[in-house]
Length: 333
Image (cartoon, rainbow, N blue to C red; front, side):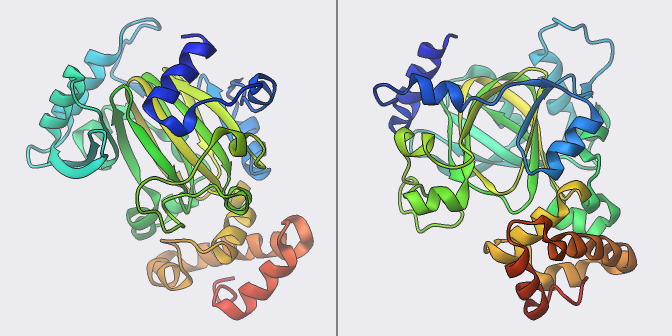
């Protein structure tokens, strides 16, 4: 699919993605390029709060899979055999994006026929047979959430992501940084700095009062700080800072993995965002309740992040210190 076809299809799936005239140059400049994965490169880009789209991230499913083998049957079989019969998936379905729950077996029937426009992003698979059939070690690299099971259960999330051609996930943000790895299919992602976009009139359903769909247009998107677009497809892995709002269109039948993480490399930026930018799920009370037996480990983590923040390495360092001291985060540091 060339760029004209890609954006033509995206504009048909969601009218807010129709390109304005003379947009070729800013669109070219906003494209996030794919790079080869190394652990050092990922750590450095996390530390700088940058989105990263990698090839060669070692996430595997099954055994003896050849490089060019069509993965869909392998992945579908792993999903059908990997969840309890009683497991249900919460899906978005139809042009109206109605939300409902269906058995996992029905979800895969819908996906294989492709007759329904649907998406699922939060089918948790930790401690299932499906979990044991894949290797996601690298997706949890640097992830402090994994130090404590109760925190991981509440905030870490490792989920199956599946959608059909034309499905649109409306603009939203997540409290934590996240990753997405693709086994099958392709998705178009548009990401931007949420605060900067909000100031220009871009909405997201997480933080704004949205009655239908979040306000969005390509012209505003292309002049918003942090604006990037890219395609996640087979074998590519996205690592996305939680500061970036995102809107996603499925170009081809898609199956992948999604996760949330809190990495030491980006902990100062993450803490500043949680303190200053009105998070939905992360609060001092929640962390205080969930650190449990690992409280000393978490205190050291927050102590390091606080020193980075108060040392001026965060763009919000002065406000960060003030809010930490009066907002309850100080006690965790």
